[in-house]
Length: 148
Image (cartoon, one colour):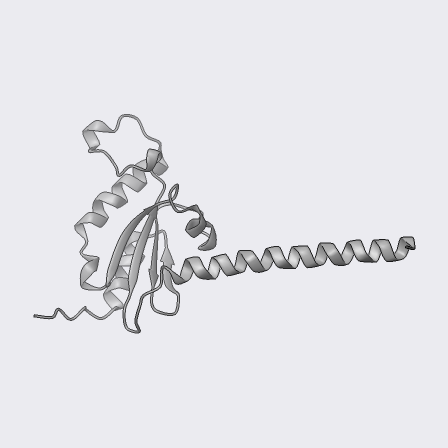
């Protein structure tokens, strides 16, 4: 084989391998996000992603010890969020720990915690780290009709 054809073969192999790897990543991303979407049109699913140490929900304030500002903010948001009643607006609600769902955090490009994400049946309709913005968005959603 001539040096040019060896180089061309090597370059094509690298491009093909990179394309396959990218395709696998995108496929896994689509599959992961599809698992978070609402099942039906008109439904909304909400998840809140936190980055608590040791995958634990916050301990009571008197048991926390010293925490940094970012962690303290997460604790405050968690406590305030528990006073909300998003179940009047969303069909599914979940709290997710970043350590347990790293692919979801990666695929949703979450860089700060906590992050609120709301899905409909097509995909992400809302993503924010601001609880006030999230509350305002929830107000725009129709109330869930409760069946007797």
